[in-house]
Every structure is written in C-alpha cells, then in structure tokens.
Amino acid sequence: MIGQYLSPAYPPLRRWILRTWGVADLHLRQQWQAVWPRLRRHARRSVRCLDAGCGAGLWTLELARRLPAWQLTGLDRDARALERGRGLGRRLGSRLGRRLGAPGIEWIASGFLAYHPAEPYDLVLSINSAHYMIAAGLGAELFERFCDWLRPGGELILVVPRRLAEIPAARCLPYSTANKQVTTRQLLDLAARPAFELCEQVPFVGRPGVWAQQIDLAAARHRLVHAAAYPALALLAAFDDLPGKSLLPSASPATPSAYWLLRLRKRTHPLESHHA
Image 1 (spheres, helix red, strand yellow):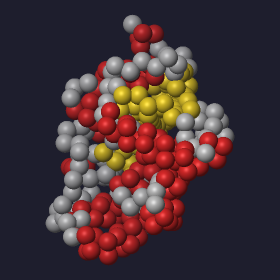
Image 2 (tube, one colour):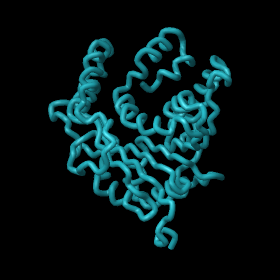
Image 3 (cartoon, one colour):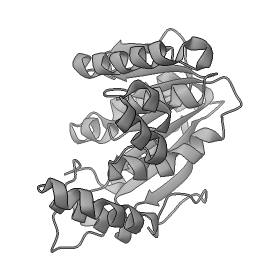
Image 4 (cartoon, helix red, strand yellow):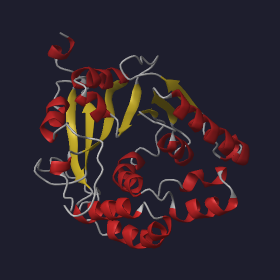
C-alpha cells in the first residue's frame, strides 16, 4: 500500500501506522491499487519516469523507494509543494542512507506546456492532473506535450476523475469531485490521437468504493467518528466491484465509476499527420 516505503521519514508512532497500513486517504489508496500493478510490470527494468503533476511528491518518493533502478522526475508548477517533497526526500536520505535506497529524484518547478526535458521518458504518469488542463481548453496541447515527453514505445498512464453524473454515488450522501466538466467522450477523443495506441481503458472504484468515499467525507467533520468508522470504510472499499485490477482493454464508456485509468503507448512509427 502507498506510504509504507515512506515510513522511515516519520516519528515512531506514524512510522508504525504507515508501515502497517499505508496512508489513510481512501482516494489515494484506491488510485494506487489500480495503478501500481501497471507500474510493477516494469520493476526489473531501468526506467526513466516522469510524475507529471506530482504535488508534494508522495507517488514520486514511494516509487523511488520501491524501484531504486528507476530515474524519477517530479514535475509540478507549485514550488511550495515540491519543496515539501524535497524535504521528505531529505529525511528519508538521512534515515536510510543512499545504499539502503534513499531516493535520488529530480524536482522540476514548471507548468506542463513549458517543460521540455533534455531526454525523453520511458513512462509518464499523471494522477488527477490532466482534467484541469482539458477543462481549460488545453487538452490538445497537453496530449501533444505528453507525446513529446515520451520515447517511441513509451507509455502514458493517466488517472482522471469522472464527472458526478458518471459516478455511482448515493444521492443521500455528499460527494466531492474536482472534475466538473470533462466527459468520458472528451477524454477518449483526446486519447485517439495518431501518435498513441490506447492499450487499456479501465473504470475503477465502483459503487461500494464510492459509498466508502462518501461516508468518509460525511464523517470527516467529527474526528472521533471518522477514526471509529475508518476500519469499516476500508473494508467496504476492499469489496469494491471495480478495483481496477483487470488488464482487459476497452471497457464500456457507459460503465459508472469514480475514475478512468488510461494506458497509452506512443507508436514506434507515428503517422505522418502527427508531424504535419
């Protein structure tokens, strides 16, 4: 579970909690459950990986600890968030030492469209960031940048929250989603670019997992109630009917879920129209 490999950076009690259960954030745990199996398939390779929209670097640092052969870059326009990631990385380094797997990460403060790496990446990971630019009318430019970042044959893994109308939420409970505009059709139209091959389209977090999120949100106002309810919520989420584990491609766009996971491969021989 995400957070387990970052536990050495924290005081003893939190270290034990993270090492035993990982982070408590249900959304983050659900996203990790879907994405990690796709990343783990590359564990034996030396991979150049860009975490685009890394925020405070939780995913970046976790991957650096789990996959020490990878070269990782954390990219975000929020310089303060990046500094928190650097600070956590320094604490890990001081506790572990590089020989034991302290992360060596390049942190880049930049917007997506302004970033031009010196070398292409084997893998680009974008968790909960693409929909903001798509909603702002910059989807075509964003996917061109994704293409430019990748070497031929490289992979792009996107996690995109769905609109509330596409999520199997209970009407009697609150639900918070950052995606107010981007539809499944818009996302798939952008993914159907000449330079990319869509390898997987996976809906994940179905009705039980969404209900767990909703109850978690409702209980969050009361700390003791929230803490008492958490084991039951984690169990409910564990019995989700769309855990994202399936590797089957091309799920139906009508399938209700909280998120889409898209895995795209940059074609080795792009169509000429891409460069026109």
